[in-house]
Image 1: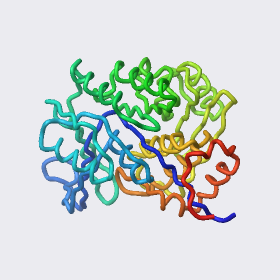
Image 2: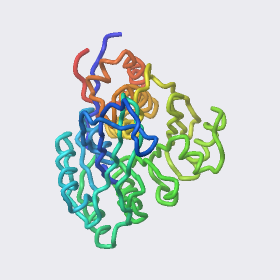
Image 3: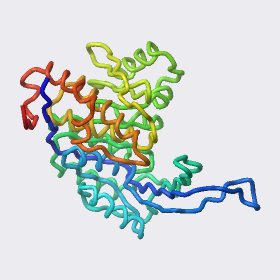
Length: 338
């Protein structure tokens, strides 16, 4: 089979909680005399866009147009956050600022091992006037697919989620939801939801250890939330796709897992891009497994480029599903090379 470059070509609007992922890298060769903890000699630090902003960064890296709708703090870190997002090729609608400080997650990494994470955050739901700003921006934003990236930091409220889903239905475009169990009442009627295993367990109220239990839960959640599909991510065990036709288990494609930070964001970005470009469910899931397998081999919250995906030894698995798609399902694909 000759290798093709079928790149998703669409605009993705992401509404959700943006934050800054802060990494401190260093070495530890001794314990502190003050307490039995390592002393970290700092060798460097880095700030990266996180949360919904990481979804936007991945969309942009894979060749899509990313529009981010979020709130940042009206502070120095908030202004840095906006620069980080734009540096990754995504645009920020607004931008919208609020008095709450910008959320920051600081991870201290010693000899490639994360030893502690410190979260700097104050979680407040949007005020009514802030909701109105986001909803007005959603209504004015043109996109081929919408994403609700819910990190339960306040941006995704019941009203914002309902508006996003209603806009998707009215325009006939997909709405992809990365959920939080405590907001289970927000997502009914979306196109697809992408819980990980622990989130799915919280949603169904039971442990999901065996593949049969996971598949049954995926089918149950799809019906419960009135979705077209549900994609349950299982880490090293891959993912399960549940649709009205049944369920399918996709194997993980990673050879080596270095860091799982932000891998779920990469999955959401891949699914959104492919659905917005007219791909079928199985091709979208296979693309997501390949993208996730690549990103977990990187250090920290990272992105995967389209060239990395098509250059992967696992790309033929995606092509197999693309070959099975009906001609009308490939209408939005941009094809280069035969």
